[in-house]
Length: 432
Image (cartoon, rainbow, N blue to C red; front, top):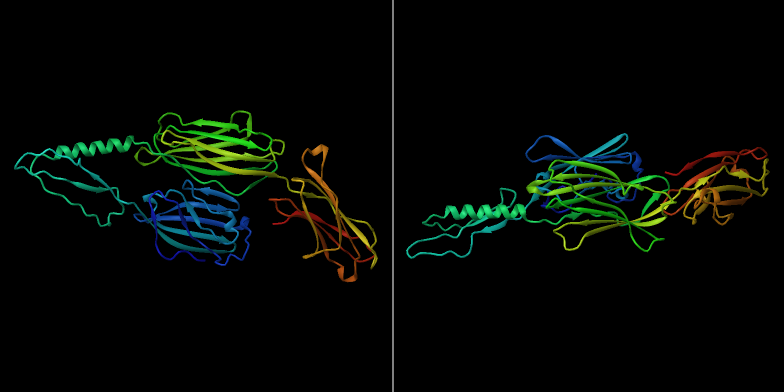
């Protein structure tokens, strides 16, 4: 497993990806339901490790808001950690731990967080009296770490300059704490998100570094059947509380398919952040394809921040038992295997037949997929394979596979027993 051997330097409030790659070539495909990934941080001033992120059997747990890994890259052995808007206190040694039973691999990588200095000068104009000396003092502040070389030029003066310094410093503090800071909204998935019919999927987002606390969050749904956006949620922060405040709600009362969980956090210098989880319970009766639009409004923004997720609802095919046209098979006799495929969506379905792991190109016929009255939008079809069995086919599995866009292949198999005897049917299963 490879990680970046050199210390990684990151600027304050930027997005950082810490590499952790198990297979450099990316030629393998892993079953991520069996993989465990844990990320830890040991800060520069501590001997204790803190958990940052954990992935275990499909469940993701964030110990640091916004921390994530890419599941599509994890399939290729890439468990790199993404941290949005890194802070000074998050510098230190990161440890990546990948568990593929029964083995465990781990590596470490260092991240140094730096902040560029800012200059806070005294007023440029000063009234002077003859034969008196006054100063111009420039203080460099806001930098990190302390080991940075900072040159401060000070001209010594005679006179009472201390009150001026105090007043300037007080004004700067006042302005800094009252200054509006525009929020930053993390990215949402840019690719199409496939939701399985009557199952739930959760999306995570972070709203970071904003002030004042007052903020409005709106969620819209735009489907193909509507020319306008449907408002699902209009939420505003409440009061001026500084502690963490979890809020979980179903949107707009009647929108039971969407549930939002928010945690409002008070960060440094009266700056706030929100960690949000949006859960969608998809149903074909609600929509088949839609855009989910997240909009953030704040007094420091000229135009609202917007992010979009494109959703498609699918239903995995179900395969009934494969049936053979002949009860007692004879060598060289032409037989037909029939499999009924049902309860899938969309209508376009990919059907293929295999003998063991070899794709069969014999006479295959699949009927047109049609919607069934009792299942609404769910479709069904029938596929048939005609072939002539031979002695070398004894004990071989004949497999029917069906797959819809965005789903996993689902299969059913049939085993050719001794010729002249009744064959056996295999169980339905979904391919990993």
